[in-house]
Image 1 (cartoon, helix red, strand yellow):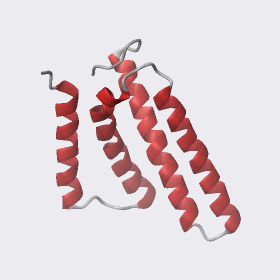
Image 2 (image 1 turned 135 degrees about the horizontal axis):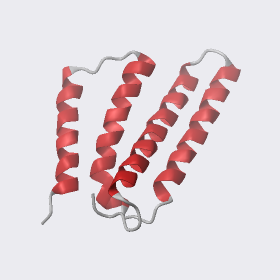
Image 3 (image 1 turned 30 degrees about the vertical axis):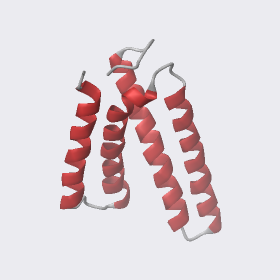
Image 4 (image 1 turned 135 degrees about the vertical axis):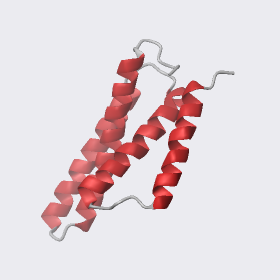
Length: 117
């Protein structure tokens, strides 16, 4: 993982994992709000989702790094966290196409992260 100027690779991975969890979680909260029946519940979930997404934006942009170079790791983590939240939060089992596409995403993330030319 290159692009981290003042942050160790382990910390970079942890920050990106937290950022992915906040981004996916914020989106899931907004979705939950849109699907809620009561207006108060809708507003609560949507506001909480918005605050969670704000947290993502802050976490991912605080370190002095070249985020474009870390994008392979981030996209892979985002996909994996999204599938976990989709399964545990919404009860949706990934289809074969999700598994195959996910394998391509993970492979692409590894190529972007480790291919040095």
